[in-house]
Length: 364
Ligand code: CXF
Ligand code: ZN
Image 1 (cartoon, rainbow, N blue to C red):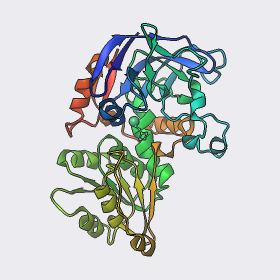
Image 2: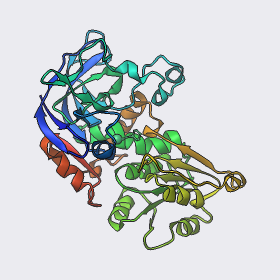
Image 3: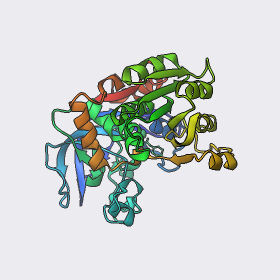
Image 4: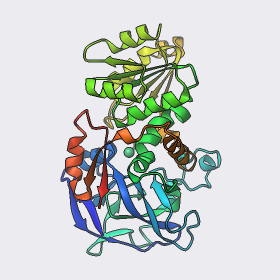
């Protein structure tokens, strides 16, 4: 099959022919119909491939059709439309039993044992790394059934693919991670692909004010279209002062979707007494924050990191698909550009344009 393979860190994505195994055990073979370009894959491809050594197939926002099932796979039938998710859960550890599949203690149980089993992906008889158990930049993915969720057949594939990461992360951070309640005030710092979904989540939660903060006016305009009630260009004004003034003393929840010390610090200062800061973005693996503990205590702030919107994919993906199908979650305007599998480098270059929210591979 064809896959976009990264052969060296920073070497880009090259269309190649590789081999994919038959489904074993709980595995499911999926014909990929849409595969979203998430920024995490670009970070991995350009300077963090230690976890997924090259040659590697990245891509973790996948939607497609089930074409074959391993002998122990019971959750799907051939022909089902499914969405993949990087959350790997066993279903049986204390975290999974407690309803926290995103914090599964045995995620590796969803993968093949490299000592006992042939790799899922290979090239000329040698293993090819399958990133995050998915490897979605390919014509097909072979994946543990727990990393898949069925969606209605009338859901188009491109917006469905986004459910697996960008939507789950943005909307889930607001609904699951922060548990924003109707009437509360929200600020979202960084309204790119994930931040826009945080704005959507805040609309669904019934937030009374949703202030979008960004450095690009084009992104702020689009955030308004997604439901932001106010926008702040932090290159033109002091974002902390502006948010505090707009909301009469600060917001109840600030989401840092950028993930650098400067934006987390802004988030802490733009929340009101007793407010919460939710760190959703991760710009750099080495970023550190200097934090005033007296202020944290005296201002009774909460600070938490959130991964994948604290998602339970089997609960949340169908929920968000249903909201989309009922016209209550805007995913269509997230799909700014559709590309072919051989155009991933150009797709990531296009994401630098503030007019582009998400790029999706739809031609394989
Ligand atoms: C990532 C965010 C950083 C930790 C791993 C998961 N989410 C999606 O791309
Ligand atoms: Zn992602």
